[in-house]
Image (tube, rainbow, N blue to C red; front, side, top):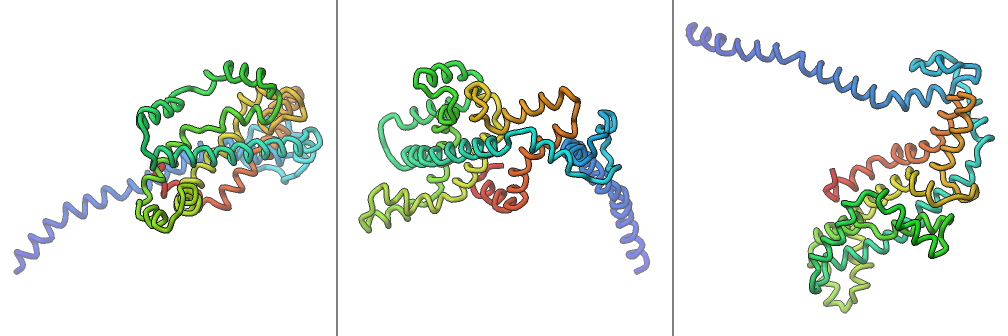
Length: 294
């Protein structure tokens, strides 16, 4: 009996030693993760600190990443006074909302056609349509600008929206979403005498809500942060959006090397999306998980 117990302890000894050897790895992984998080969040941390420091701080003092003063709102007050933020926010809201509304109509119709309708050359047309995903947006700037000038849409918000009213990514996403919905729902609606419009509006779109929300998030974030295309199209100060307005605001503040003022203006632009994400992050994650996007 004693021999068996001794054999059992001897067999368990290497396992215990292995466990003791592996114990430092979780702590090392946690430290590595914390370092990555700090590096990723350092610009945001600096922006928060710089925007709440007094105006008397110099450029070198602004570079510190540790809170060393009493927070103040002076930089935000100066930023609000120096920039046309109300106009920029309103124009950005119109741009994002107008683009998204038209996109939801076009991608829903196109996604339904590619997912449910049968017509000659459907697969070829779909892959040709997806070719848009392979084109870098700057490649299309010159032809799009030429088209806008001929249509009289240059220096208008509609001119900024128009090239994005059809989305290859959105069409692909809605096609995959509709294809994941069982046809039993459609067949039941057809038996009840529903037309394809009623099937799309009353049956498929409510079931495709996760895909719609996922695309809406991508669209809003992209167009809220877009800079190059609005810069090329918009010329009048009253038509400026937030990204273009922020650059002009930063150029004026940079002349005086007022980094706190630039940080405050940048935070005003970032804040709406950041607050929306914090408030609805569970819905955001669930929408992407439901559509299979990782």
